[in-house]
Image (cartoon, rainbow over all chains, first blue to last red; front, side):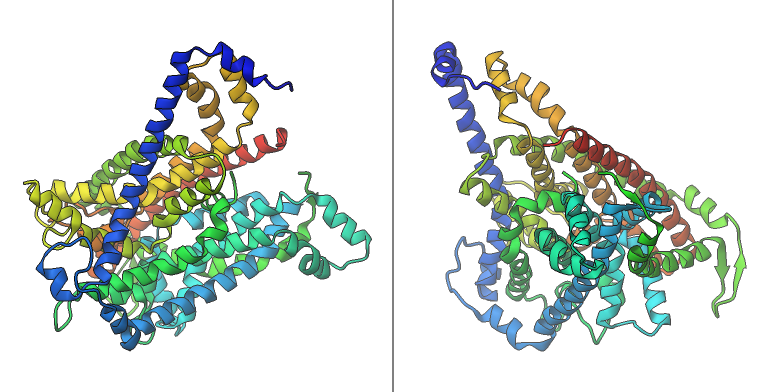
Length: 289
Length: 293
């Protein structure tokens, strides 16, 4: 492949087209900035409201809090129905992430390295579960977990979320594992490693970023769900989503606290997103792309 | 990659099979049970055959929900796919700015869905929301609790806000895989911007674009939480989409038979789309193996 001499390329391109590309660049830059503003303004409004007092919120619209207050966050951290919502959600989300990634690792290895009876059907079946509408499963889940006595426990929600998170983790991990050449495995076996030793000491470090991405996506999809967690819990395990949707209380809706609670749910994602920024597309596309 | 034939690999897959089977097959079996039986309580069931399916297929309410759902998904795709592509084309290719824009773009994707609803509910309120009050100040009579068109517009803008970034990120990943030499060849031919897009970028994005279309269709087809929080399916039932209706039917009214029959039909549609998705994915994998990067 020969590269073009840049001076030659410049000399042949007429001036008009160069002005055109400049204009084009400026336009596309402008469009991008507008779009990002569109994404950020609603979030800014939420953050803005979370620092206002309720009287200020209800008295009219102001772009910055006139009477800056941490009170709303204080309410959340001192009222156990609020902060336990976060704790409960975090417990089942972490449990689910742990279960999903742990069982998905060997399965993804099997799919990426071996062909076995029914492997393609199984892989497809897993995909259908990732795609399954939660609304279809809400009621049967309720009955299933009630009948085995797990209703209103963390483990019930964690297991129910496995429905879509295990397939997701298997697909993502398989996508990463197929990038590791098979010679790595073979060399390790020749060197006398057992399967377990090879998998834990050699293979897992090689796909560490894949494991991180899979865990991130399991965390995220479990964290964003409202329907299933709301259906499977009632008194003991009140989730943050439920805490936020109980719209009526004795004193009416407390908008400032609601906004603060919303801001706090965005933070976990916002904290780790930088580390997975190059893999976000791959994660959403189930390990492909 | 050449794969070794080894049926013992089943042991590695077994835990996944058991866990997903527990949360997928058992519940689905109860659904099937309800779909073909009726009950007067006390767990006494009798066989009604296809009665529930007939009822659901004939019911006006279902037709309306399905129609609304299809229109909603069509509008979502018609806006998000072109917009997503356009934004992907404007992204910087590398450097700190590229990373920063990626992070900003991905932010809405990571927000819990009920919070997305809350954000837009607060944002569009006429009395306390920035958008709502701006519209009111401009003299627009905006009320999503009363006006069906306002409710639809809010839901659509919200979904565009929430999910267009997904299309953008996927297309961006596709664009990144185009070698610089392709663009150089285009410059030598003095190709117009449109020609570069049409004959270089679009063909290379085809695979990821298909994934984006399918994912967006699936997820918009199953949308539940956001309309539930923002409009609650109203005003009237103008924003009652399939999932919203299904949950109302199953958990609100406990009409198990029709809800189950409806679920099964819903699931068949999803199965069909999953199959298309799977075919696209496997084709994409093969392409990748034939042309190593």
